[in-house]
Structures are given as C-alpha cells and as structure tokens.
Amino acid sequence: MGRMRDKLIERRKFIRLLTPVNMTYTVPDTNKIYTTITKNISADGLRFETHDKDLKASDAIELKLEIVGVSNPVHCKGKVVWKRKMTTDDAAPYDVGVEFVEIEDDNKNTFLKFLCDLIYNLPQGE
Image 1 (cartoon, rainbow, N blue to C red):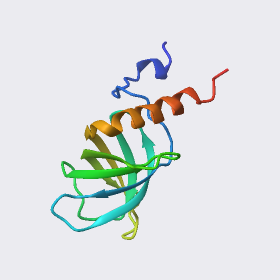
Image 2: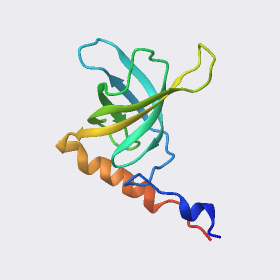
Image 3: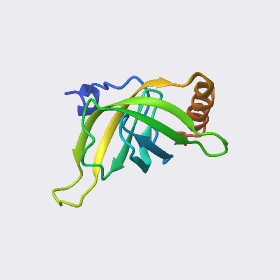
Image 4: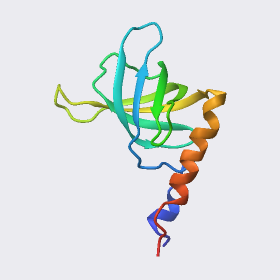
C-alpha cells in the first residue's frame, strides 16, 4: 500500500515560505490602515493574522510589504481568498489568505529577489 503522502495533491503553484514580513494593508474606500506580520509568503500570495472583523473573502486590499534591507516597501494589490477565526474565543484573531492580483512594476524585481534569496537560503534536507 502506498504512503499517505504519495496520495496528497499539492494545489499550490509556488512554495510557501514561513517568513515574517512586516506589512500594512488597507481596504479601498476606507480610511483604516492595519499593521500585521505575514505568517507565510509566496510568489502568488500570503497569509497573515488580523483582528479586522470587517474583512471578508473576495475583498480587494492594498498591501505594503516591508522587505528587510530595502528602503521602499513593495506595493501590491490582492484579493482575500479565505478568512478563518483562529479559535472560538471572541477576541481571537483571524487567519487570512490573500492572492496577489498585481505587484507594481518597479517593485516586482525587489519582491522576486527577496523570494529567491529566501529559497536559496533554505536549509538543505539530508
């Protein structure tokens, strides 16, 4: 009988990197700016934690990612794909998954270099 791992199907196109990146996001047409840290990030999206109760799946958001060693943040637009309450506690934060819709042209190389550097420096399996 095959191992269970052999039967799993990976739906993601890109590896998710468990890297904290300081970020802010806004929902267009609101004046609120939320500050948080990514839980993971990839070339096509990211996951973060928030206490924003109003954020919902399919919302368009604007993000600014603070890449270490880079003076200007990476500006991008995303779409909320999913949002889940982390625990049943009323004060518990939400986990949010975002798909990138657009990364500003002048930021694409910075962002891709950042991801490539992370992948290159991953510990090698034995």
